[in-house]
Amino acid sequence: MTDAPTPSTRRRIGEIDFTVMPLAEAISFVLQASHDVTTLGHPGLAVHFCNAYNVALARSDRSYANLLANADVVFSDGVPITWVGRRAYPDLTDRWERVYGPDVMRGVLDASDGPAHYLLGGSQETLEALQQRIAEEHPAARIVGAESPPFRPASYDELQERNRRIADSGASIVWVGLGTPKQDAEVQRLASSLPVVAMAVGAAFDFLAGTKAQAPVWMQRSGTEWAFRLASEPRRLGKRYVWGNSVFAAEAARTVRATRR
Image 1 (spheres, rainbow, N blue to C red):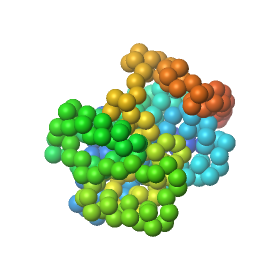
Image 2 (cartoon, rainbow, N blue to C red):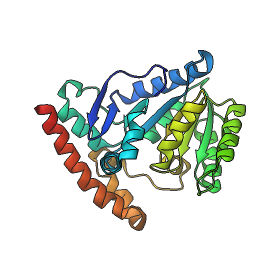
Image 3 (cartoon, rainbow, N blue to C red):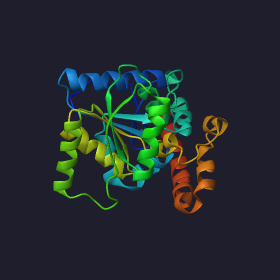
């Protein structure tokens, strides 16, 4: 964990300590943090977006749970997280909103006179489509670098070269879309190496680029977005949702019982 300012309101669901704040405040926080790391000399900041699957993974994988224990910020990426949080911690009902990675990315990109952005992840085709969409829909955004890393693990020398490219670009925010849990480890590494706000945003690259369809708004609000994604990619996501949802349900029940005691 860095010494940079972080939100103080955190509550645990399963093995993860979530940062509780409304979406609009989260966007403002990210913008302020990106300013602080470049102008005030603050160290890097690791920002994660976690949903039901992340909670399930943290229960089954101790190394992943330990990684998130050192996170600076963990936002509530899924609606079911907000349901459990409000029930377990009723004092935060009014503030515990879904802080969805794609929504935060759109909000931060919209900022006038905003930070410089670096895009890390996705295929080359997705990155090209994403940069075109950003130029069309967020004309004020400054994209100073983009790279599609190889699927295999990077060597030490390759990671040092990546750090150099990001530092030379002048970016204060690095958006990381490498998939869970790889992206979570990478934002921790980046934040400990560079004065940047590193954000693990998952499928946000595909959604903003238009290379994958996003669930209808009513499904996002009703907590059934997972069903849309499962129907879209059943072979890739089948095990994730069947296993993850059942483990999350048990973690949710355990959390509510513990807080009521």
